[in-house]
Image (cartoon, rainbow, N blue to C red):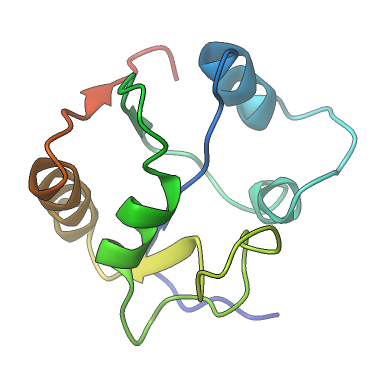
Length: 115
């Protein structure tokens, strides 16, 4: 699979273990289990936005980010979404899209600074 240059937003969940899930994804050494594990072996993480909202917003956020540059079938094998990985040309465009999606859903994204 080839990915055009730019910034990608991956939408996932980590109920009960959000921080542990994020730390796992950011580790270089790990058993590859999910689609995102394979992508991250060749990508650089530049930021993590998350929400501690108790509602299950994973699919709702992903649907709001969906566009023609979303990577069809990525990260959504356990739901009916078209994708959980979305491509943007710039980091600013990606962050604004995520913040807008969260705001429309009544959730507040928080930045995780320990990258």
